[in-house]
Image (cartoon, rainbow, N blue to C red; front, side, top):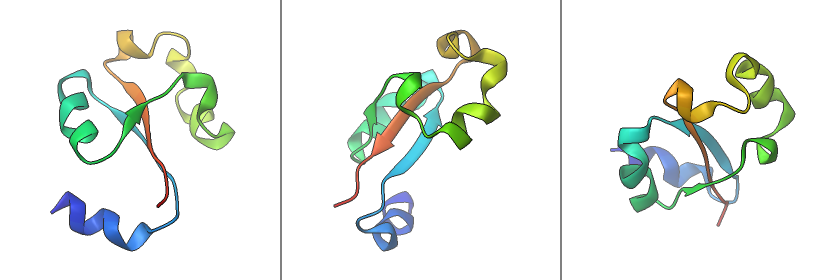
Length: 67
């Protein structure tokens, strides 16, 4: 189901914050872990309360680059 939602995004990169337990799942869908500083500014601003401590917030930034 998630793959069907991703398909229409085509060439657009998709940024997410995965919970630690779902990293393998999102990796199987083509997402890869990235550094917090790589996230677009508008997304980083929403998570500023735990910037630099994402794992402590049970979240890991990931991206699925457009195809």
